[in-house]
Image (cartoon, rainbow, N blue to C red; front, side, top):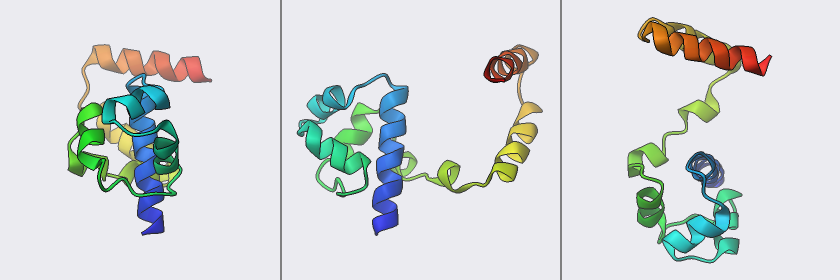
Length: 105
């Protein structure tokens, strides 16, 4: 259970940041204290009463909230997955990804 709390907390934090919310903003949206949200994101507490509110505020389904595959893959698996995904992208999206990678080097 400890690992699930940690993984869920990391997923919530990742989604919160990607949506542009501060901890305080998300806490207000789901009607909990910011300290409580911090404890959830750190994996110290499980948000049983707040799960539905969190998924709605972050615009994700509950199953998506518990999808931790991206956290458990090793680097080689991630690289292979990226390479396979490129085949399904449009030339315009490939150019965007290329520019993104170039900007990170």
